[in-house]
Each structure stands twice: as structure tokens, then as C-alpha cells.
Amino acid sequence: MQKIYEITARLQELHPKKNFTPDGILVGSLGEVLAEHHYGLTPLSVGTKGHDCSIDGMFVQIKTTQRKSIQIGGSCDHLIALQLARNGTVSEIYNGPGSRVWDLVKDKKRPMNGLYAVSFTKLQKLMEQFPDDKRVTRERP
Image (cartoon, rainbow, N blue to C red; front, side, top):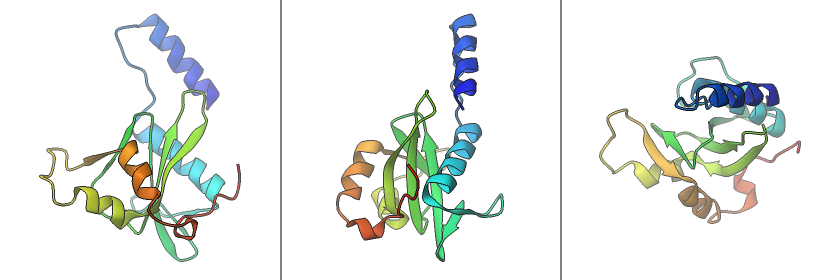
């Protein structure tokens, strides 16, 4: 992962008017792999609607970004939101019931792209409202 960031940083130096942030599908896939490793999750088949992994019979959606918000298009059983830093480290922003996050946006007018932005500030405040037993336990640092 560090090599990816070294390469994109070099591209940014060479082409300062372009943005080479590894985002979108790449960041999402990296986040899913990191979540599988750190939380002991089992990946679901590619293209499974609404969820990426499972653990102990619970379905989990992973949202990973380099920004200060995630985008969601619907409810899920459980949601883990991660922020991926340029040095390759990952921080947990939210780990809890997906329905609680969906409740924050479901009554708003649907954006053109169908995805609602939810800020890290809102996610962190929401996560403070429920106990640790509502979270998927991180198995590895």
C-alpha cells in the first residue's frame, strides 16, 4: 500500500494540476481487505448487494474513504466506516448498526447519484450512543 501512495505522490509532483488520489473502487477494495484482516470478516461474493462481508451470521458493509465523509445508498445490517490515510494506515470512524446511519439521511431528498453523504462528525457522535457490544470486535491491530 505504501508503494501505491509513493507512486501517486510522484504523479502528483509531475502533474500538479491533476489529482491522483487513489479513491473510488481502489480505496473501497483496500478497505474491505483491511477490514477482513483486522476484524476477522469473511468476504461475500463480489456484487452482493448492500453488504461486503459477514461474521457470525451478521452481514457487514464496509465504507472506506480518504475524505471526511462516506456515501451510502441504503440501509445495511452493520456498517464499518474506515478512513484510509496516505501512509496506508486505517482508522475506524464508525462501527455499528447500519440502520442508525440510514436513519440520518433516509428522509432527505435523494441526491442525483443516489448516494447520501454522511460526515465523520455525525458518524462519531452516533457511535457514542451505543455500547461496545454493538460493534464488531477488532481482532488485530
